[in-house]
Length: 299
Length: 304
Image (tube, rainbow over the protein chains, first blue to last red):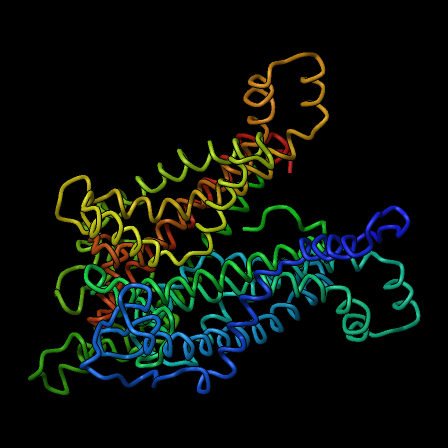
């Protein structure tokens, strides 16, 4: 929240407005919001924005460098080893990243939140058992399990989503539970209980609204983890099956040409980094704004 | 003592759960006989093999047999190489240990000084530098960092080798890639705990009585701020082992991670399950180590 500046204190109202605006903007993660908006728009309108086909290229146009490195304006990010336009593939890849992040966080966040609320509210042995399960979840080498499942079942989009949901629910459960432990001691919860409200009603009507902000914070901070995990799995060939233009698989495909055509792998990789940094900064900002108690370092 | 005991039990339970998971996965994969039996075997031999492997027994008996074998160090044979998985793992462990060890050293030697500088010079040049280093290290995909380093230092400058065939220098690039990620966590944790300590009453007292900045930082704040970073260091070691899967793939480093990825492309499930079990074991051990260190440093934990 900005502190309003008294009108009389300022010599020039116009200048004051500009300063005030700059002051306000400095507190907003402007660059994050701009980057994320651009990526989301690109994801939403991918077929309209992409100038070329994302899966089919022209072999005669193989390894054209990006515009600024001696290429043409037809392929601003250059082309890959099959002559496919990298810009078009990145735009379509944004769609994959956004869908993966939204679905995974939606499902994983809901499951994790529900488990966290029940665990924190129930307490006792229920809480103990659930928290030990969360501990075990963190000890499982997920990338390796994902590789094993891919060997057995073959790569698929559904499998990837399932694995990512499994990756993130624990974070929500842990943080939500900690918050619920505080809320449960509040007078209004005791009051509601003494009025005869059922546990389900208390959890849904009185506890859930109190944890929404923490869910938002954890959710934003976990976008990066989901995107990185998806990219790593795609890079290792255990993600979305080819030829879908997932950013991670694009980096993997370009890796072999690193000495002659660096742009094929380095440009898609920079978009992964950009997306992760933007959401991390947005998450930090949300956390400071919604819950100052969480300001300590998150792992 | 109760604290440690609880931790040991938790570690054992974790290992049990992972063995169950791996066991279930291996059964989803199909009948183990199909991999073992020769092509011209008769139906009778098929049943005989089933009896030998106790496939006619209830599932829990099969699982018991499976874990008994594990405890005795029998992880089965590689489907492709027809050699015991344990032997293959042993040939890869030194390479992985070398990479993880070097990366760990990098993470500590870079992470701790940067974390301290960042907190002591809060808001200054070093603070901004260290925080950017940490944010980038945690946000950039490891394989992308690896490729950038290869492009700059191996392709353009030709200073360092990009893969493992040039003696000891070949460990540098993979270790920096992996260590950067580890160092980032160190910087963030140490910075925040140093800031807390520097802001505390006893540090203010030390300053008020005229202690030098050096004494305040090293004798008072740093020692108390170590708790987080030390426990985190043990976990970093564990995360390096998992993180090395991608790094080893990019640098063709013949460690456990590359072994796992190769096992995937060869559909060599026994090898993969060996790597999974070994990784979990290392992780559980590292967490246990973290708890012991935690207890050694902070006497308050011992009472709990």
